[in-house]
Image (cartoon, rainbow, N blue to C red; front, side, top):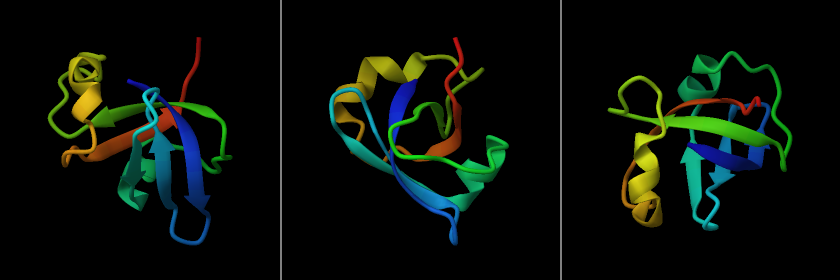
Length: 81
């Protein structure tokens, strides 16, 4: 699923993203580290995966409207075309 980086704290390697519907979701250092990133700037387009998502596909998009209901981001990386 795609999102936009919203906040990022270099000291804790955690932050939050905004889904395309404007829903903010936090991510922790483990999700940041899983994506292999070294830095994240607010406004960058990112790809995120949630716990339980098989194959890293966009299967979470169907439930994006209720995304603030406890889904946990396990990977965040830059979106590439």
